[in-house]
Length: 310
Figure 1 (cartoon, rainbow, N blue to C red):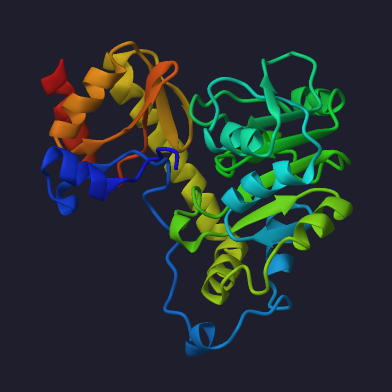
Figure 2 (cartoon, rainbow, N blue to C red; figure 1 turned 45 degrees about the vertical axis):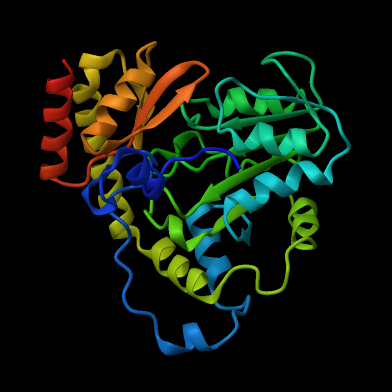
């Protein structure tokens, strides 16, 4: 098991602070989730069916054909197992589940710009926030047999998305968890060539995506008004977070988090945790990632803690 954000129970045990007293900024999940109504009883009582309108809603939102999967994590783990072992190029740092899954499937990670059979990028990069343009990614796709682009954090600024690019050797991963604030739903989508979607479909168990998840996603993906308001809210909060963190260094990031590379990462993590503020710490390179506070009380709590740290 790799370490991830959101481990509040473990943080509560380690620092002796009750779970309810924490400000969790460790995940990059939007603090304003899509406001789901109560589901009708049949969502709980009936098995899910594929002709429920989810694929149509997702196709309209992403502008591409999709395969719903039980979280993009499922795709991250499954895709490397379907390929002959080879050399896979990834930037450093990157979301740790990617190199973990490719190594477990027998592939060898090589440095950025090294000759490779496959390539994996997050756009924006998790955790550093680095962005890649469509032209850069299509150029990269031309150099490898398969390019996997994890776009978990792109929904607030989707201009450079490869969704619908038509590249026949590119798979795009999207998630309902970050932008929509519905990480607990555990639903993602694979966008890419029909042959790859069909191949992945063959590895899904029956009813792999739960009925409540399909119902929730259909509503969220179709609500254009809420999506527009969410983008404005996230971008404004990201600008405020960038300004708030300037005392620690030069922030990078995207609409859902800020990333600070600093040799003081471990000490700052500890100081913030003792204030009941959980952030994400990285060791290689040393860095912290901050998610967005959700209201004025949370902003003041973060700002006061940073003043105390100095």
